[in-house]
Image 1: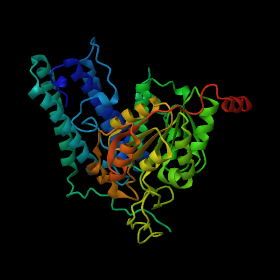
Image 2 (image 1 turned 180 degrees about the vertical axis):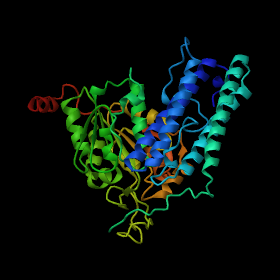
Image 3 (image 1 turned 30 degrees about the horizontal axis):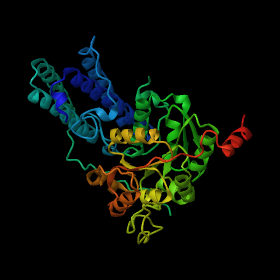
Image 4 (image 1 turned 90 degrees about the vertical axis):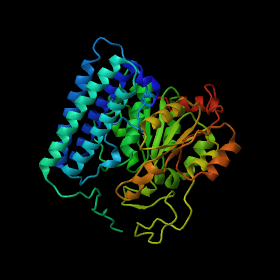
Length: 171
Length: 267
């Protein structure tokens, strides 16, 4: 990641807003996809997760009031990976996905985000930015705990994360 | 100025969950946001196949054409309306088999448009038959139980040989990088070809591993011999802009043939 992210509070906030907004948008998109494929339980779960993400995005936006954030193109963000850390990757989803599998991915992306904020908090030399990143990291650790609690409540056996349903090939 | 999500039409895609084409849709909307593209000045033209459904999902004009004919449609449209930003798109079967000849001549003709091929190496819509880019020994179709047993097309090398001035390859696992590539392709004067490795999780679930295999390469050159050397030694998983050599697009504003065509088709 670019070193500017560790020193520039407005740049960090721009990343944080996009991170949360993209997470919510992706979850709404996945909810739509699973609705189209008639996986109603997952549609509902993704909607719930999307609404939570949207609330997180509003919380982050509240920190930005009255401040002019830099306008970045999609490829100008400095993420640890190809996409923002809280976004589900499309390839992590399939049409017979279970709630357990979805929550495992949700846990993974929440942990990625916690890692992102913790990394900034650890590496910055700016006290105000450290305080902000530590605050976001604390919030993310609450999100991690919430997803873990939902997973535990399911009390399911070990998961096979593959779509075992073979494609229909009539020829 | 619109945000990327405002370039989505609101029609819910019916692609399989996990399909790479969602990512291409995201990349296109992000590129449009970066270009500050007025929706009414953009047209997406497609052929037939899973990927060719994409125009319905974008807030712009769209034309879902016939199989393999996205490029002739797009060419005609651009000649008639040079003010529009025309993007043709489709899949590997549509583009390299049914529309293979159009692909070669679109590269040669150099009309100012972008051609995006979402390459998943399979005919997904018709339930998983081998396409022109299917690996030689892929044995998952009952139609080709021993694999296609012929070498797959090399789309980027073909584009270079046929005269394309902009050649790039992206991956659906990196929609932001792909958005940047599409931004550059739209800015390129003349025909720009972008191959996107876009996984089909239903018929080729092994393609999920592509994210481990792709590697970014900074090899962009305007020298066709250097580009040819790279593309013929490439493992098929390099991503980046490989070749950028702008030449005068056809038609020019005062080209009499194009002017006659425009007059003839005036509504």
